[in-house]
Every structure is written in C-alpha cells, then in structure tokens.
Length: 339
Image 1 (spheres, rainbow, N blue to C red):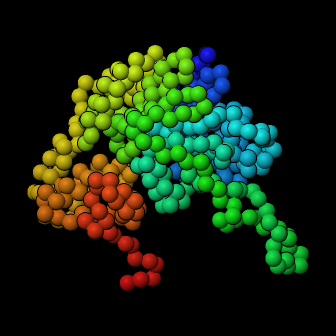
Image 2: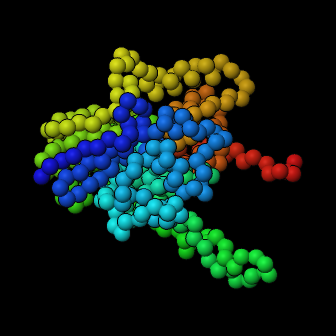
Image 3: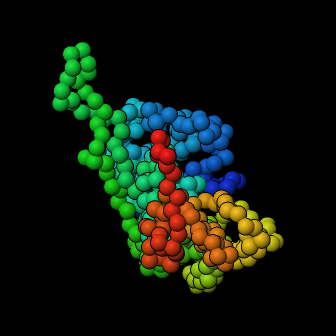
C-alpha cells in the first residue's frame, strides 16, 4: 500500500493548509483553508470574489486547486463545469476553526464528511450565525442558483424566482471527534490529539495509512493557558513512532515568547493605574485572550462588557470552563432612531 501526500497550500506561506493524504483505497484532506497571501494579491476588504460567479473566480485565480470530485454541485453546474457523481475524497480533518485552515470548506461538496472537535464545531456554528460574509457555509450548505416557479406571476415578469428557504439548506455530514479515540476513514486509522492554541478545540492528528505513520500538528503552541495539552501531544507523538511529521513553522526560529499569564499581569498593572473606561481589542473567538482580559477586569474591580457576537460565543461555550453570560455585561447598540 503506497501513501501519497500532496500540498495545495501552506508551503512557504502562513496558513492556507490544504494537504491531501492518499493511499491505494482512501483519500482525505488535512484542513482546507484560505491562503491569506494569495487572496490578498487579488482582493481586499471592499473587493471580494463574486458570489454570482460561483467557484469560477477561485479556480481562475488558482485560489483553489483544480481537483475533480471535491467541489459543490450547485457551483459547478452554474459555471458549466463537470460535476462527478461521487466525491473523490473521503473526508476532511479540521485541525481548528481559523479561516486559514477552514474557510474554503465552504466550496466543498455537501457529501464530504468533516471531522472536528466539539469546540471547533461551536466556533464554526458561531461564525455561520454571526457573520454576513458570502462564503461562510461550513456546517451547512445553502443551495445556490436554483429556481422555483412563482405562486403568483405578474404579466410580463418571469415565472421563476431564486429558490431560498430551509428546504434548500443541507447539513453537511459532521463528525465530532473525541480526544485520543481512534476512528476510521476507510482503512485509514486516525487519532485526534488536543493541542494548545488561541482557538479552543485545536487538534493535531495521528494517521496510520498502512505503510506510513503520519503526525500532523496543525497549529500549536506552548505559551497559552493549556500547555499541558501540547506537552501530552508531544509524548503521545513519540509513542506513535511517526515516519512522517507535517508541522507549521511560522515561529519555528523564535527564541523567546510571552505567555498569557504575563499578558494578564502586565495588563492588570496598566489598568489598575487608570480610572476611566478601558477598551481592549482582540479576536472575539480567541477565548484564551478573552479570559485574560476578563481576569484583568476582575483583578482591578471592574465589570467586563462584551458585544453581542462575543455573548453568543459564551452562551455556546457554557459548561466548557469559561465565564458564563451572566458573569459579563453585554453591550447592545441602539437601533437607528432610538434615543
């Protein structure tokens, strides 16, 4: 049995991981993310790919690999491209929910299973529920470019309209995986190993293809609030005796770092010497950093206020060891016309 590894992103760049691992009978992707560097060559905040073009812009600009049997049928049919009957891969292992590892799952066909941890599932649920981006369908897929007949037709107007509604929304096959429980994708034996990262639920993977034993680290760190997760992964990876390791090297040559506790201590000292309101900015899905500033507020006898998106995430993560929604104040902006 021969193993083949193909890189369609993540090489000589930060993120954009799209790594295909195949043996004689099965094929999976390790992540399917957006390359920020490639995307920034063509797009900006106010210039984005055209949703009306389906997948054409992404393929034409080589933002997505030209692989048969992996992309959603509605986009391919709209672009006049060949749509195969069955998928050519057996699943995607999602290491974590950052966009450079997950965003382009949106373009994958609806019958390709996605394997991810529960916290990653909750983060993706929050992204779908709270963002208005055109390409954010990770857990569910809303069929596009379908027409249905109007109930009432005005003279001179088209008798068809764009099909929308829950009947055109499809749930992807999502598999929530447990730490260190072995599972199978075909004859590939896989184990998920939690690691410390800025997003909760980050996972490395051990993959036994039959002739190779592969460790895929995803993104990991040792300086967060849970270095014990990464330390355990290192020990288990050694026991696994890998023949191949795939790892990111964004800061592989760094000789120093600052941990979250140091940030909390420094911020507490700064805030304690200030009497007015304090505004902090951080990625709202980075719950480690949220916890840091929440602790700063507690250390300095303040109340911590969050926006509605952060509040929704806290509600989803109730019972996962983070402050509850009642532990913070929620800022609700006034609607237009309100005093």
